[in-house]
Length: 308
Length: 308
Image (cartoon, rainbow over the protein chains, first blue to last red):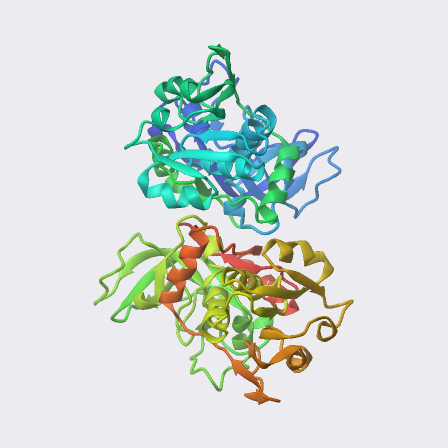
């Protein structure tokens, strides 16, 4: 089968679209015929070797850990999925990924694809959606009336975080470029800060939860806008656990079928709108990574891999 | 290039996935590399020959008149589109269609693809969306507070009609099976009638606009629920122009880039949510037609044709 693999860590030049062996199924696995694969920053961070101490990957490695597709074979011990089921998920990141015609995934890591959206849209949702859920619902426990600041509100994770925070009843402040202001308002943000013209730390205060999708200086300055008992959650780099009484937390999510089912219901109910900002053929994976690395993508980036 | 053509009118067996000549560009045309093609009832009505008196088609004919894709060549006299532009549209139905790797389309019939959705979703929108717009906005001139009845509210056209009528401020009543009740409510319908358990003509009255997507008995009974100055618009078969003072109208839309731009803005603003209920590979076009012919599809049916 065709797959995008790396044989060494490095820049985009190490990406190879090539023939690779069909995945073998372990007990509890299903084989998914991949229709679309989501592109996430973790893909190129792994490609560049930044996570090699943390993740026991063998090379060559097939990248990509967001998938929407159709079950094409079922391994031993799988009771709840059948050949032909449309599924989506964020599979275990230590295994070969979804930039491939087929991927082996534990059935327990998959959920039924939302019934009202295309595979390309479904493939954009798992990793970003589980991440946004973890921060807004589980860590942040956002309550009605709380104030939430979402950095990079037009991005793949930020755009979902805004919508989940609104669904929980929060007052949502988001940063975005002027060009994305209307889009971010359409997601439900109550206030949008053009971070280029206005330092957010001067425009925002008394926040219960900061969702840090950027790290670095943005993270460091974010403490200033928090309430004394506020929480800063980052998905980029671990913040201090405490800063003048305020709490910090780091989130790196894993597979989570339970949350996938929650997200699918919200999508099919019209509450959650996944944004697909760019689509590429599998052969153009380097261009997809380039866009992801730029940090300038609007919504999510998706690779077209196969047909349903 | 690969295309699904018919060499004679008939049942699904006449559908042939085969090599076909690349379309030649006339002045004002662009060549679109097709990523996805929407499936509409008109496709199999043409395939069966029902419209052959009306439409001057030459055989073999490539079916399909909903497209989302990327401009791959530009003909003479085209100023506003460039190679690489992502576009969507409902091209002129007398020309060869979009069940093909490439389709020649007048540039004036295309609009920029909505920026926040996948090609597969965009391909589901043009014909159904222009139709819903024509009925709700142009013919119906729906005003806030008016009462609108949408038959088959979970269908490809009905699901968009509900949302457009709500956007115009109407009180929307829709028919749907019990299984689709929650979906139709999520689109904004104020009342949902399970047509299997409740004759709609007993449950609804004083309607300003009936949107008839079914024809036959449903159309005939729909006169009863209209206000004395109400309007019945059908997209299936022409109703009487007058019935006890009430007006009837028939809609069969053509290409309309202006409306495509309106629809794209509504999608990107989060007002309009196109439902993709089923996706098929181009090779499985017969199964896609079978589902369309069944009248039981939820939302729209889309064919995967190529990559962006």
